[in-house]
Image (cartoon, rainbow, N blue to C red):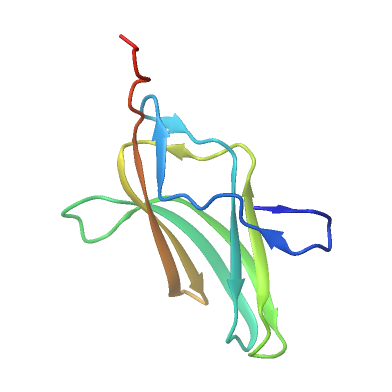
Length: 125
């Protein structure tokens, strides 16, 4: 995501569904998660949670959680939040991960991505 200026509207540079890395564990490239939420009322304790979803396990494995709060003065108002991961995040293993958003402990949204080994460049040994 980028903005032309501090007050300009954001534009999505790229939305990812997979992260290719040369080896595990791996540190991702820097990235930003940009959120828009609505239908709130008053103060909300928020968390953006990144989890590894292991096949066959009921509970995902926590990678990290980012806490923040939002205050809704009008339920029709759209609030934004940016979680900036300047140093990337460490992904210990390949597989499916989810970004999960909670409000006051209740999951309200999620998005999946896959971490996988990068294919060797064409012509590489």
